[in-house]
Image (cartoon, rainbow, N blue to C red; front, side, top):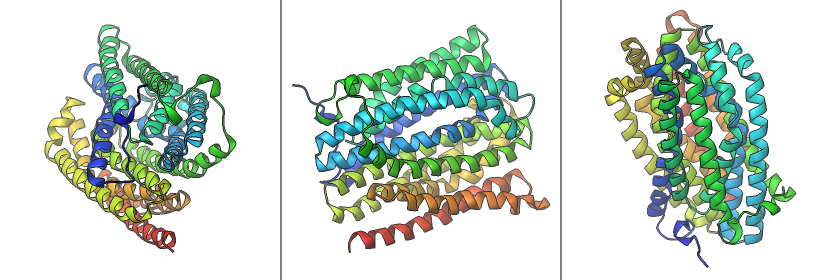
Length: 450
């Protein structure tokens, strides 16, 4: 009988650095490919449909995150619960987690499809989207959200595979789906002149492909990770464990996105050129973020497996190694974004005004982006230990609350009412929140070792 041991990584024993890198590197490539779904949309419309279409697609990112983050948080809960049972070798509980998680993903996707389809325009209006951008952004979102069931299935399925250290096969799935997405983008927009509708449809098709592939993978698994259609059922005990970890994570994501929506609304007040430049820069820095976020995911899985195996003394090694990795990647890629920003932004738009507007954001975010990665790794460690409410509260107060306070106070002062001072709210909030998470970890660790 064929097993999938070659895809598994036992992160609860042996040297930790190599295992974190083996886990994170495929995840970086997977995340970059997933981000390319949206990047391909932005590049194609920016090049072949104009600045209004670019602004329409780019300005929807914060809204998409707002509507999806609750359920993405639940997938984090699935990852932690599954990794803990995997580390403890509790196969029956692990299998119940798989079936509960997959069914949750279907239900989540349907809820998001209905909500996104019917309420997109109203929310975009509340975000002060300019009249020339609003119809295109609404059309893009309505089509995009039709693919949410597939998106949720892929995210939950990938979270389950990550629980045992398997980040390789999701990479292969996204590579195939990503190639299809780019080809369809060019086909629909250039050949059929479908504008934003074309790129949205291409994304939906590619999302369904990646979802089918991850389900086929789970159908062929052995042991506790194997999925059977006939066993799809929500186990009440597992469900509440997922909620205990996932709801605070999801709620934190929602409030983070809400603060970003408020910032996007402030950006919108500067007009279509700044919106387009901000969209291009945000898309560019997204590649840095997902590279750092891979170490956040590695920290969650390593900590959860370690706690499941009862090896608390290994915790310090996980923390130090994860932080050094994310610091190195964040500094290297953040500064690369600054140095090569003028050329990279040309990929998104040929307009020099849009490029200059994008550079205003890149020069603030790039040098300080490592702080965001370090903050997220601490959140991952705390969730892996079993604390989900604590990092949520700290993040909401430290990051979201401070950004909203910044917009309500500093940004309202006439001399500081510039796009630059709006962007400065990010690094300030990252630093203060990271320090608060460190204090929280030291408290949690002391309590753990009593």
